[in-house]
Image 1 (cartoon, rainbow, N blue to C red):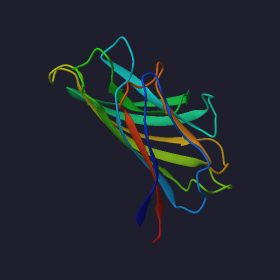
Image 2: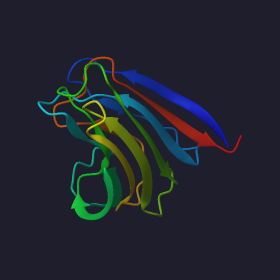
Image 3: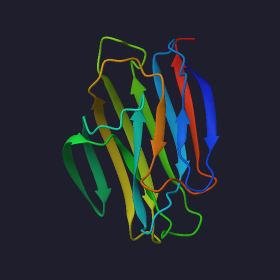
Image 4: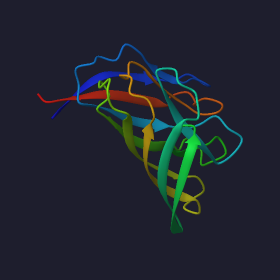
Amino acid sequence: MAFESLGTITMSYGGYASFTNIPQDGQALYAVMSVRAVSNSRDESCYFYINGDTSNSHYYRRFTGLNDASAENFRNEAPYVGQINGSQSLAGLHSGIRMTLGNYASTTTQKAWQADSGMNSSYGQDNRLRVISGSWNQSNAITSIEFRTNQGFVAGSKVTLYKLTNA
């Protein structure tokens, strides 16, 4: 497998990362994020939207490590990809997210994603590790994807999207 960059988006204050015209000749999409949310809290949920679908027709399961561990199931929810630092967390601290979306060019199967995210919002008192697995209940090929939070990302947040190929 080889990674081919489809681009890096560096956000301005309140911005989102939108990738369009995604080539249909790859095996999977892989996103790497270094992000921080505009919010009035220490942390914020990060979501992604496929082909402009903002519905809550997604299913996912997440494992959370926060002082102890827990697992939760979600149905008919927005497509959650991780928990990230908000504006009230340590100054300048960004969260990391890695996400894989398999079989994205298929027009006959639903799409599944896996992601992991990590954040530390208050000097080690609020460390979080999330591992997420979910599905998009559509069989359309993925031609666009947008990463966002409720109020956008802070300036300097970055998302890079890769296409995985057989090369």
